[in-house]
Amino acid sequence: MDRLPSLRLLTVFDAVQRLGSMKRAAAELNVTRPAMTQAIRALEAEIGVPLMDRSRKPAVPTEAGERLARATRQGLAFIADALEDIRFAAGVGPRQLTVSCTLGFATHWLMPRLSQFYTLEPEVMVNIQAPASELPNFAIGVDIALRYGREAWTDGETIRLFPEDACPVGRPHLIAKLGDGADFRKVPLIHVRTPPAYGWAGWPEYFAARGLGRPSGPKQIFDNYIQAAQAAVDGRGVMLGWHSITDRLVADGTLVALEGAACDFGTAYWATCARDSLRKSAARAFMDWIASVTERAVA
Image (cartoon, rainbow, N blue to C red; front, side, top):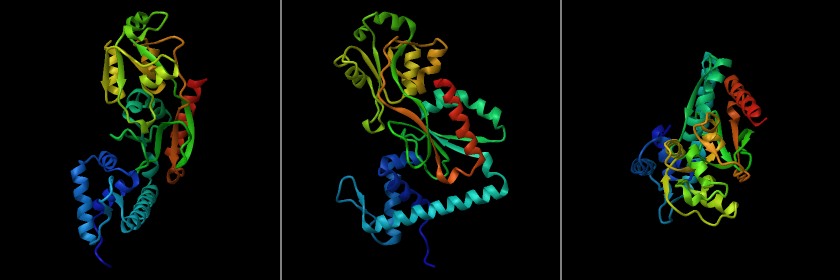
């Protein structure tokens, strides 16, 4: 048998092809983009043929690259299945569970509730994977993905958790300052910069949906909802709150929601269990638990 390329190089190549972006692949693998580029070139040198067509921007896989991507995906999936079978036979697989979600969802929604799950399933260990790309996905080893979107995901068994409305929230004195007319020019607005592909609405979309023109006045801009929520708690301004981010802060009185100002963008949060993980008792228990938690909350 000819010598195979290293598993590390094949894993890098698989991530690039699966996510369709060098930047997203680098974020998932927690390496730099130059390191990703170097790994792809090393793989090409080892195989002896180009795998990426760099005459196009962004680069796309060559015919050889597409063939290798299909074989690599199948091979890595086969390895993952074998490892799962080994763990299952050894009695350790069912107790390990990996959940992928955004950092904001993990911090403000999942982690505060996870003790409830451990009470029901004390033998299960839940590993939380929050990719820097803010796009939860089924990387190798991920059992369940918790994601935001308009429609149900089709890459596994999916359940709808809760509708994700948006509503202005802030410290009580700032919400009171808005007045009955909700004059947003009276307070600083906290913005979160997210790529349009992620689907999260911001202040411009909120203003447009409510016929308010465009937001104006002082503003602060952050790269994620962790920073934005902390700024709102510190009284730096009013942010566009979401159930998954600010509900607990509103429930305990730290923040106040602007009455009658919620906006439904037709989006929701979903839980998807990977097809290969459906046989794991821990995955099934987690799906049942999170469905019951959100069911009670919505009711």
